Image (tube, rainbow, N blue to C red; front, side, top):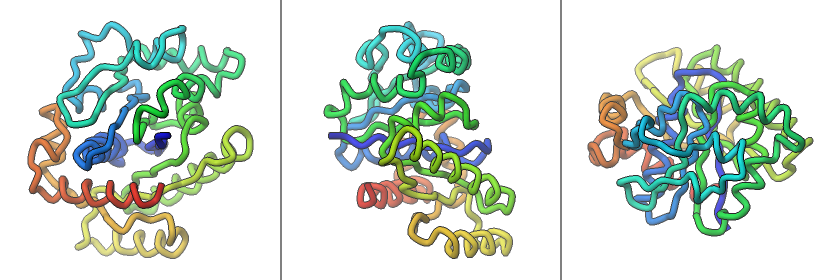
Length: 253
């Protein structure tokens, strides 16, 4: 049975979607069957996988608010082993509909139960908030990957997110765990970054991925072309970093 992994951080601009897209693609490259669910109303992951949002007939909004099945809303991608449940900006309305629904926290979990055994990994890109969409993702998930930058403000946000995960674990999903904290946009030459990394190693030694994702222009270029970085420039530092951290993820969960 496949593992469901949410990528979450309520702070925007930390490389959450970039990490989710590129790790999902890397898992596909490694030979796994992967379903990617774009649960962020901004829809950057949908675009980042080369899918035109204006052409979509059904999206994750339909999955969460109607009787549509996962198969009904899944579209293929051009990338090995990788399928997509896309989104559009209409997804923002789902926050209210889920909040007004009985067992609204369990909708994603219930829908994914029908396909979980067909994929090795189901990757969910959460919105940059801790609302009902993120709760739905975490209730359905086996683990959470937390991408973050090496900044002191990010440390404060991390403690809040870890607290939220612990609350969801105690109320809805007793098997939920943080399966990794991923450092993104890392610059080893900055003393500030090194100090924050030291703090993380001190407080979360077993959660921190050994691989850090360095700043790399190819990552930005790849997303602009609607491609995971491995397919845009497989020998780039960004592609190598995400391939390595994906291998770590496989060992962890």
